[in-house]
Amino acid sequence: MKLKFSLATARFLYRTVHRFGSVFFDLDSFDQTADARVFEYSFVIGRLSQLPIGKVLDVGCSSRSNVLAPALASLGWKVYGIDTRQFNLTYPGFQFVQGDVTKMDFPEGFFDAVYAVSTLEHMGLAGRYGIQKNDLRADYKAISEIKRILKPTGTLLVTIPYGRPKLVKSMERIYDKTAVNELIHGWIISTIQYYMISGTEKAWHSVHEDIAVQADNVRDYAMVLFEMSPNHIG
Image (cartoon, rainbow, N blue to C red; front, top):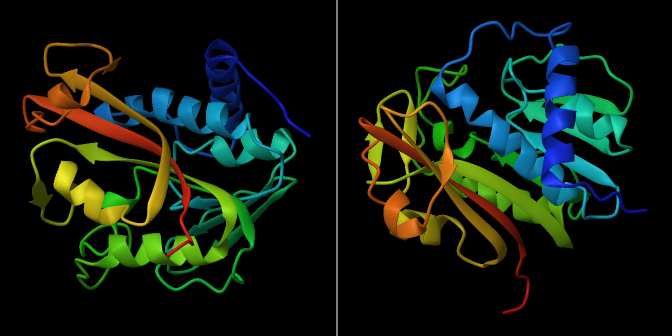
């Protein structure tokens, strides 16, 4: 079974579920990064709406603004969430597993789809999100583990910061083109989008990669969004 939605419909669904999600989460405090959820969540819902409904994994699900799990479950997906932190959401069609994304207990080829929204850039950086020990290769390990648990025909959706490369201690990695290519080596890219916001703007907007890669993440901030699938050939 397939469900198809326009981008406008996806955004409407996001706003509706966002209001519903306030029952479970503290959504009163939003910063610039949280504003990016408008297009990040729309991207996930829009891309998954083009696929047959099945099992999907939400990587790093415990963000207080995360309403994707109930939204997708309400559309018929069997949603699993994994995070090192506890996530207190009881919702039909959703199952939470507390654990490490770099070494998951799910069997090989278990999921039809996986998404990681603004998550990979934080992995292995001690000081936040319950991370106690630095592991600068944790994002690579996570991608490798996701490939193992994803069906060969499955879909992975990723959103990460983009621009001039930087490691912000205890916070996040900023990926440039070289770092992105290394991270997703061996995957088949089907969709890639870039968004950017500057200190003088009130909203994110779609940009070309040549512009996004210049973001310094001080005066401006950029994101890259991927849709990709495993390449198990060769």
